[in-house]
Amino acid sequence: MTTLLHLDLPTGIAGDMTVAAFIDAGVPVEIVRAAIAALPWEGLGLLVERGTSHGLAGTHVTVTQPTSARGPMVRKATDVKRGRTFAEIRARLTQSALDMPVRDLAIAIFARLARAEARIHGVETDALVLHEVGALDAIADITGVAAAVTHLAPARITASLVPATEGLITCEHGVLPLPGPAVLALLEGWRFRPSDLTTELVTPTGAAILATLATAQGPLPEMTLERVGYGLGRKVLQGRPNALRVVIGRAPQAHDPPAERECLVETNLDDLAPVHVPPLVDKLFEAGALDAWTSPATMKQGRPGLVVSAICPREALDRVCGALFAHSTTNGLRVTEVDRRRLRITFEQVEVQGHAIRIKCAWDGEALRHAMPETRDVVVAAAALGLAVRDVAEGAMGQWREVGRLRHSKRVIHTE
Image (cartoon, rainbow, N blue to C red; front, side):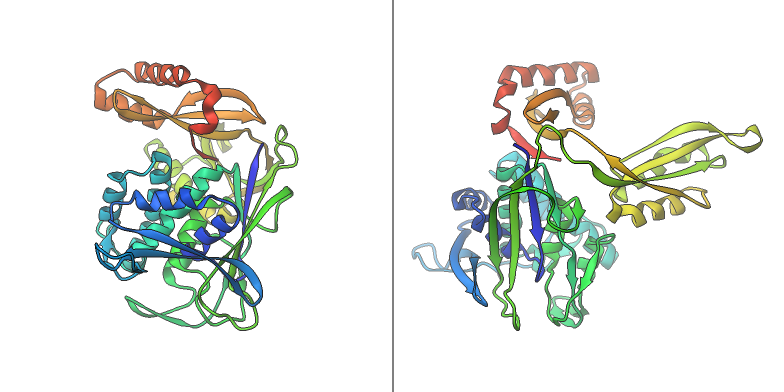
């Protein structure tokens, strides 16, 4: 079964609303609580409550800490040691007792958030101090979302348009305009729609979750509906519910996934030094390209040259085009809409002499077509162990086969 997940943002997205929506949609509370309890901050818990917002029933969540070591009373864990650096959060998550897929996804969300904030404030990512988003409740919210998504293991996550409001908000850095600078930095290339509200609807934590998880925007995709969950926000909005909606369903035909509409961007170059080609391709991936490559070409007057090509989602088109203009010698680009069909990809985890290696598995419905170790993981492990890349790759595949590939459903760490 191919699971699809859609995030509907009628009144925005925040970390606690996302956790609440997943729980309301049927993710077991124990899975989220176990992930939060595994964090290296003692006593963190999750209070789950049913509630309503303008007549719409849903779920509220609150991250809590005990008021004392002796008593059962708890308080909201918002104001405990604000001002953590990204380096500290990453280190503590890495050393935590979290399951590896949950830990890796939580770190990926924080890394995306830290890169955006670092660019805004002009500091190095590791030195960046995260204020509101470094508080314990934000850390727990992101970890809870990572646990829920890992449990569901959707093949594809989509989202609706992002509501944009006007107004001001007061935060650690003073009074800032809405949408917040971090939200705009995180959601570059995303489509916004105007809102008549004048309050913060999309928080930096919510934007980081959205930017990390969702791969496309638009209306609810074609699916067989299975579950819907409503995560309620605490803020009271005039004339409407304050809720994030999570919609979960099955793809119409698991064995024949629908074509994805993407963009092919190309340009011909005959004056770019070969030494500058690999950094250009790296920049295309950083801008959001799904794939990028070069091929030789014969240019005008018989000059040798190359064609630079990139496939990207529509929402990343402007960023990919910008990267080509900024990091190559091109004066113009060709953009073509194409249909992309692909197998469902999952990643499983093995260890070779203490080094984690991801195995990339390609599925046609329920049929496994092929599996290969991730080259980056193999190269890093080989360098650390002083072994040949080929030997580490063969060892990883041997470990994977020994565990038994038919048990993949319990070992999937994430999908794409």
